Length: 342
Ligand SMILES: [Zn+2]
Image 1: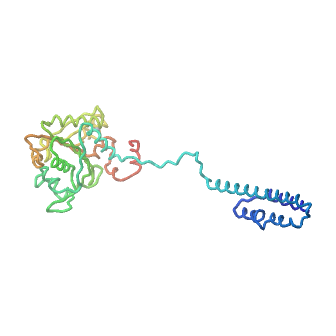
Image 2: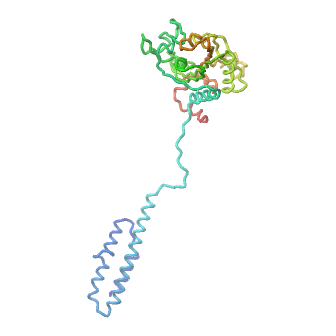
Image 3: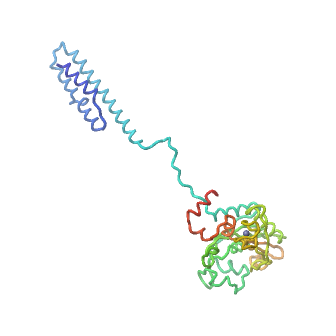
């Protein structure tokens, strides 16, 4: 009778499956705990005749052992199952999801390229405030009292008398450098400037300039030309031609506009260069002695040259961009085209 019971229990233990902690606990209650069926078998021991006690004891011990072995087996199976459920959907051998990498804005890239070119020939970088007073933006730069640039139409004034305005050019930075440093000065001032102009394909009220200034003993117009030849060839390619056209700026004398040969038609004449074969990239000249004196530099001892260029203008020529507004519209289809410049 006991043999049958033990046989049944052993079969039940072998067949038991637990797929959840609850089922595992049920197993423990039924086969392991004090009140389990195995525990009951031990209690039956006292009803067994003495001569059978030994054999019966061995049998229930083997049931107890089988129940405990199975219990460990079930615990391991459940832990294993839990782990594989946690890792569902994660395949460590798959390549990582890449985050989209942005590109550098064409104006930033152009500005960087310009800085690189001039840094290699000894220009350092200088910066100044975007909100300027009249002295640094106009008066020190030799702007006459009645110059049209001072009018409300061209300049964003924040205050009048004394005048405070958004700087209309980065020449104001040159004044600040000359006021604070003694020659030799060789500096490049890139930055954002503001003019009250209607926004169109060719003009914007916010744009970027880069200005260069070189002040030392015996600086001449030949140095200016050589520096800008070097820049044009580095920026646009070694076959680029440069020409200087006489012009007027309040802060330089003599003054010249800088033209380069049209990149699109190689000087043959096209729409971009309006058939002339030349496109303007900026203005330049020898620093007016009044400006040097205004900044506390002896104009008898020192001379200098200065030049200024629009960064948008350079970028438009270099990358053949037809509309200035594209730079600030944040159209991803436009910006994406410059991604390789990263
Ligand atoms: Zn052309």
